Length: 197
Image (cartoon, rainbow, N blue to C red; front, side):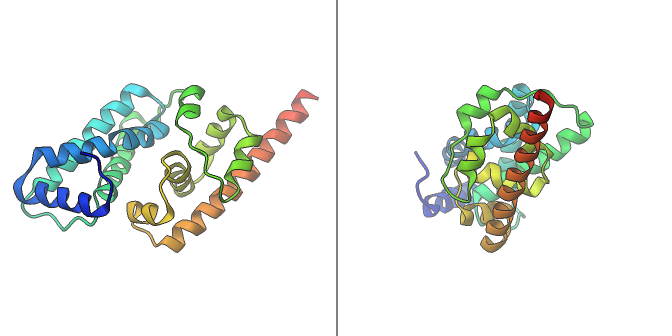
């Protein structure tokens, strides 16, 4: 079963919360597991850690949804991404920010370039390795909106729902993030050219 509308997602959420329906959860899992994995992988830069965290995210999401006393859930995507963000924070607390290298090929394979906000021009001027380095140096709020928009392909309203922010706030953050990314890439390119000359 594929999730094509918000209504279908709400029906599945209702089945999970009222009947503890594992098939309804499996449908939501199938719809989101790859996206959540990419989101986590970008943050932790290690395949095995990303797989473990993603697994924990879905287990905790299931546990939360089948509790008798939980608050109403507006959207599964908002809930699962919040769980992912929390698990990433926990991961870094446990690992004390130990990081490994993310493969440029993986970034290249998952990046879906949208032609808005000047992102296409930014990507043309930067190689993927440089882009990844710069993204990891940016503020967390910029990283998240850029990742959700240009890697996961979510719209501003969807990102607003996931992050629990207004659409205006998401659009402003995305616009600022792309500008900061562009400036940082220009600075890195300028420094690289000076070193090579």
